[in-house]
Image 1 (cartoon, helix red, strand yellow):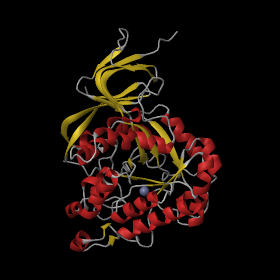
Image 2: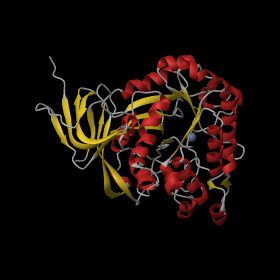
Image 3: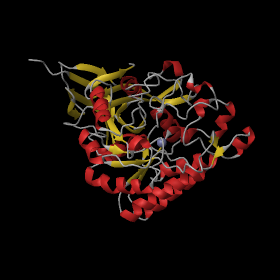
Image 4: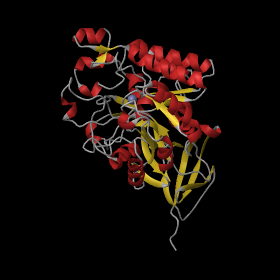
Length: 427
Ligand SMILES: [Zn+2]
């Protein structure tokens, strides 16, 4: 008979906002589940992780990840993407459908879920709303759900034909899925390299106006309001989109939203470096937008911090103007968010954990976001005080396109336990 593996995390500050708990104690894990959590708990037969001085929090849930697999495995694959997740304390992630083939068919959903079984994070699938993400022909949503997809999105692009968006948003609740909306007006965003503003003018380059994002946000909210159905707004980056979401929430519209750490810490001034690692979609915006994102996170307009982890190879990113959009983020998401929000006193650590674990788990409807007996053992040990410089060559995914390179961040993931397995350990 195989003995069940026992792991004891000893002496951590257990910060478990889903249950309002914050105390120093021990966590016992048996197999893939937490079996006990308490102040005094011993097990002579367990492997021990000494966690004195560290904070134990529920594993992070990243609602916006591009794993690039199938089709673009020179950038990332399911296993390397999940290794990057583990290094960032992300134990559950939602992967986006702009793969090749796109996740618009049952076989691709099966392929990802099968590969993910041996990966270092729990992978949830966002399937495409329209065939080939072309925005005009609806996928077989029921079949995608039955294959295991948890969410619907045309991410990378907006759902071009609004009737397809309406259909997906109206059917998603009965299918038990969420719709994650990439908000962008493709006509306004036609040809661009960065945010439209002072910096784009200085560089003499065409910019994308904030209105390109805001028109999309307004459309998604209008559909949610008209049909009384939920929508989750992806990667919010502008002042006006934040205001639209805030107003919608006040009116009882079922809207949730995410932003990413780079929108909290950087502006389009970074583009003066003419380095494509700072180019993503939506682009880094103006200082007023950055401040509006922080305000929106603080007042609850933004529910979730996600990454939009979007790997591209060094070669692809070598040309400032020709490079594809996107930056990696899972390994820096906690530290980036901690530096922007907790170090500055805007949020408590518990409030940040709510936005990185509790709320995204609730929104996606998965078992995560809580430390407790009987729950899946997804736990991260954090050193709140450690400062570190982001070195792209020390990251764990395949790609290096991080806009945080060279930055000093505070807050470090030291150990990640995913489903009872130690998937990352730098102690
Ligand atoms: Zn997107």
